[in-house]
Length: 161
Image (cartoon, rainbow, N blue to C red):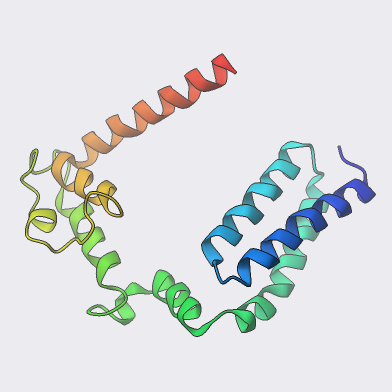
């Protein structure tokens, strides 16, 4: 396991870029960098107690991060937590994607027969909402098959590595 000084240096080396990217403002990339960095620390053998303290520190700093966020970023986080608060505005896309996923049922509606996607309820259906479109057209069993393919690719990649 990393020694305390090594952990402190690594944490600083993670937090500084996260802070700089968050000031851009690019919250998504900042969260990705931070979570990836701490995942590497955890995989390096970080002790559970140290991990707990890092999570506790991050939680204590959460109000500060919230105050530093721009208004539109705060609105996005609130919409993510409760999309039903604005069903015709910022929460529209999330709600429609949930409807598409649920309407697929067990077997789906069939290739190119999805109502949510082909009646234009889902914008950017070939990029941002491809999972919802796939779920609607192929259902739960199609999603299980897709996840099995992903799992196979991950396992093969680990074996090759």
